[in-house]
Amino acid sequence: MEKVDIGKKVLSANEAYALKNSQLLAQHGTPCFNLISSPGSGKTTLLVRTITDLTGTLRIGVIEGDIQTDIDAQRIRAAKAPAVQINTEGGCHLSAAQVSRALKELPLDRLDMVLIENVGNLVCPAAFELGEHGKIVVLSVPEGDDKPAKYPGIFAKSRVLLINKIDLLQGGAQVDFDLQRAKVDARRLNKSIEIFPVSAKTGEGMQDWYAWLTGQIRR
Amino acid sequence: MEKVDIGKKVLSANEAYALKNSQLLAQHGTPCFNLISSPGSGKTTLLVRTITDLTGTLRIGVIEGDIQTDIDAQRIRAAKAPAVQINTEGGCHLSAAQVSRALKELPLDRLDMVLIENVGNLVCPAAFELGEHGKIVVLSVPEGDDKPAKYPGIFAKSRVLLINKIDLLQGGAQVDFDLQRAKVDARRLNKSIEIFPVSAKTGEGMQDWYAWLTGQIRR
Image (cartoon, rainbow over all chains, first blue to last red; front, top):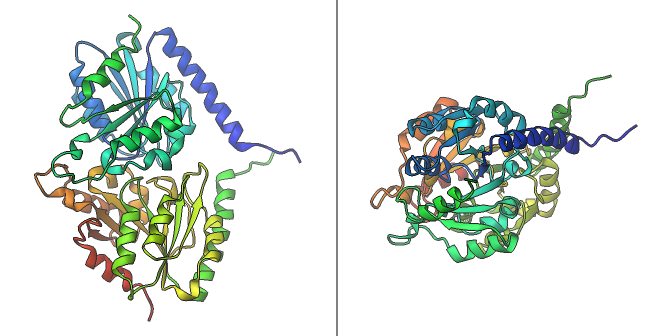
């Protein structure tokens, strides 16, 4: 009996869609980044603030991945950006095929950039290429500084690490988090990772992130 | 060509091990609960405080699931409880086969209860029975009150919801979290779910959780 390598087959089908997506994005000259994190790290709040603060500078379209509900896409649309919601109905990550369908619904010619908010999950989304130009991992302070060491896959693969909710580091040290430890552990896994400590709530540190993001656009 | 339903086959193999585990636990009269949450919700801190506060009342053994590192098992052993570390090496959830091997390493005859800390992931672990007597979902305040609605699977299946880090609700409302909304949404998915708002850091609310836990032991 012939041995069938299921894992490899599934990945290859996904990779074919990923290639198609990257070609479509290249045709439009539109960079695309894939935001990955645990549930509740603040990805949507980060996106809403980024879109609002960069109004007039960067036209951003968003693909929202969630298991259920369109809560997140509604929040993005309220910030006046086009957003396509994908509900995975139990699926733990976005697939390139889902993103391919969503890209068709976005007005790519009128966008400078596409940002994908993946399903909240620090593990599975790291294994599925979507045709993006890079992955951005978001780690929030209350999750703890040990997460790069404990979930190395996504930190090793990401172009950028956003350390969010740094406002919780101040004001009586309510949350224990060693910023230096998180940075050192992330760089041990990934020498070239860009790290931006930010608070999407207060705006602290967001300018450096915006500078990186706008620097990704070929003018 | 015969159609092979891969998903079903894998689940069935897992279920066979789960059945074996539940039989072994029944032989020893040892209840077992499976703690599931996102990374960084405070599962290990909850376990350490529970073990410490219940010393002399409840002899707890722990199975620690992590992708990499034995940081968590070390913390449990420092609290003087037997702990077996499982490293999934990239796997996004514990399997019943892994738990079966770990149960053999625990001194079940000298334990009142086994607690399993699953891999930090609010999605995948919900789909894999381990032979446990119940699932316990941990949601921490900084993750947001919308998580039951957005990740319904695990909330629908759990016996208990621990809402952790409630200390962050006080002191100037640094974190926005509507406790009532989280409770209502969880009960909409699961009428019989027990909900305990706690802070493993300050100890607030932990007595109710301990009363539930000790109530699970047949004396």
